[in-house]
Image 1 (cartoon, rainbow, N blue to C red):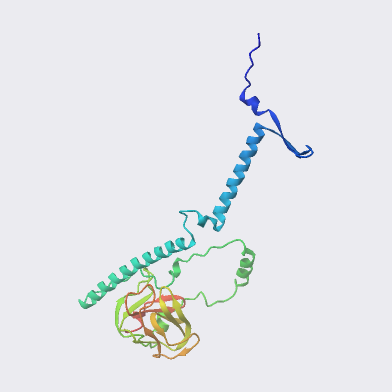
Image 2: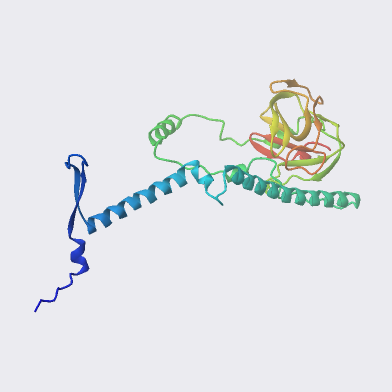
Length: 289
């Protein structure tokens, strides 16, 4: 009787070695051969598959080829998304500012006090909120300077009587009109808003030199004048600038035209700021509007 043939286990079949040979058809000479097993073949197939997947991920992630994948947004579509988001945000803010402006006009007509635009950012963040931290990189230089200045007599630490000095000056009124938004340092509104008709001239409050004359996204056409005694006046939302940077101006001289430019504006008006020694002042304390 023939002995029954035992079936080999699958794990043993994976270890069987096979020879893959490439022959020359004319001479039957071995040109190339390789010894493989089923396990080696499966490992190589898996490794090649992983490499191909990794190459595909890199190409899709870091090359423009991803834009050819159906359903994947290209650069133009993403830019449109971002631009539309910014426009919607600006439109919502403009609507809120318009409503506040209309309410202030109604309050003026009824003889009531106007409400400040607490959400309008017409200038830089408050100076007192800027924090400076010491680091170890300049410790040697800092120590040397502190030792040198230890016995120096400096006037920088003496209090400055700002109100006493400025009260001696005679300010021209930059624009005649109704004030719709008051000075509010806590609300980061460092000036006053004066409503007037279009094409009205804006006057320089003192003699000085124009240190800035240009366009900004938030305030439109802006002009800044440097006066004596570290005093700076700022005029925003103009429709036209009559002076260039570096021009000398006289007190009461026209430097700009009332306008409605910039994102943070809801009508023809002038946003006027007054700064002394790097700190904002309330213009109504020194100028009669």
